[in-house]
Image 1 (cartoon, helix red, strand yellow):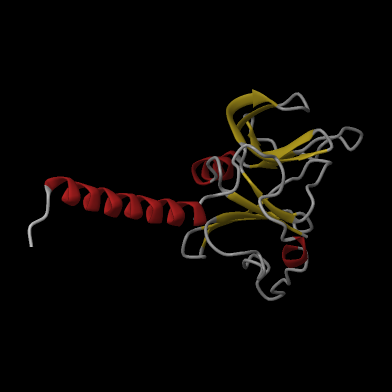
Image 2: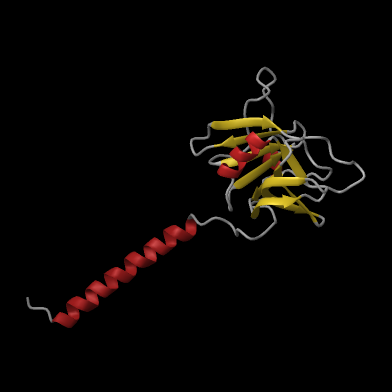
Length: 184
């Protein structure tokens, strides 16, 4: 059987288009949610709001906080867990929350700033923002002077303060698009 060169080219083109279509389908199935939206990444409030604690090991990662790489933040325990791809805790530490808490849900890191002045007037570094609550940006940061004092309760502040050492770890871990799961 003899084929013309145009028939072979047409067959190869169809095969290439089919492969590209398949790869595009796979990529779209695994694509992250919008990276620019300050809204929750997915609605998981029912799951994350009831994450039980291990009473014997209070620093243990709460069950029900999701899977895969993520930052887990407990508003009730003022604690953060940095969780790697293998679902193992890379680091956990206490934080000092602002006066505005995000609702329990799953979010993504939407912006970062190396060094700025916080809304409370304190110089902060390694700012990792992930939510907006009624016009108040919520995110993790470390005071340049190393302080982790409680915020002024009369002000609406979304800064979740961590030590400089933990701020460095958060900065390295939580890049744009990283999931942040907020639990009670």
